[in-house]
Image 1: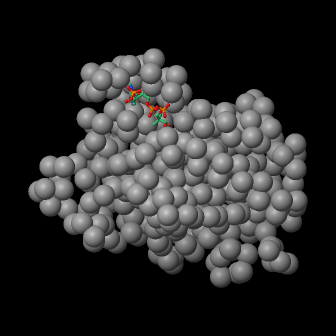
Image 2: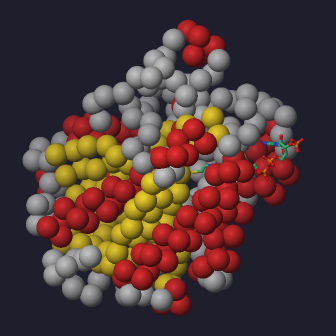
Image 3: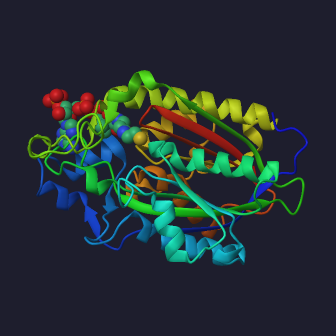
Length: 331
Ligand code: COA
């Protein structure tokens, strides 16, 4: 329950997409696929890929600088940096610590959250709690992933889906009690660990010449199973978040769903009874950018003028774990 603590709010947003574009036509040259198949089955037309020699924190840095500027703040004003990512620069330490150093933030604690495509929503919920309890005042919340680094570019069932990017928001106390984060809901179901995972490269099966030869350091997925459960789960958690916020779906101006597949998004909109005109879609340009997907779409929606003061926005995401979540925010 929310209790009597003051609300937290999103004070600024920013995003970063790498400049290198991989079109469906380019993928036709790599695997047995077609622009037509990818477009009709997923809605994706192109995606971005991070240049070699750069890591997740490099993208996060650019998104963070923009979010801080948008909030009218500097890195020295931050108390915490929380990054949703499953593609950190190093196995350890966290990319949040790498980002902290890039930003020159000196009075913070920083950590990564591993909740795959739901990582940003998990990080946002943690920041919201820390601000509301008074433990911190301002947090930088980031979703940054470079899933291109974990793709088997010979597997047509996965390599067409994902792209790289980063989104960031600054969270702090709401200046106006009515505005801010109204609710957050998170969930996991660990019985589906192997439905979407990277089999090797962790402690159970460390990277070896054999694991690399077998491509076990790349994403393995049962796409059909993910599809089915994603729609059901994002519908359920969205309703829970709306109930907790005491907001009806008709009061929501914009839904910003995780950008995995246009068919997942339209099925979700149907279940929620929301017209597609009230649903943010940018996966045609970026594909599934994992933890970056929701904050990038949020930043673009604001820049396009699709979120006005007082508007209520519903965010939701679903990914490996399975892990999923939703948040309701009044801007
Ligand atoms: N190009 C052409 N054909 C392809 C293909 C591609 N890139 N990928 C798969 N196919 C083929 C399959 O081999 C299959 O052929 P078959 O009928 O001869 O066996 C056929 O297309 C249908 O495959 P299927 O897996 O049934 O397609 P689908 O409609 O379920 O779409 C996904 C596949 C992956 C696009 C879809 O299941 C999906 O998006 N799932 C969710 C995945 C996801 O979002 N993961 C991340 C969650 S955060």
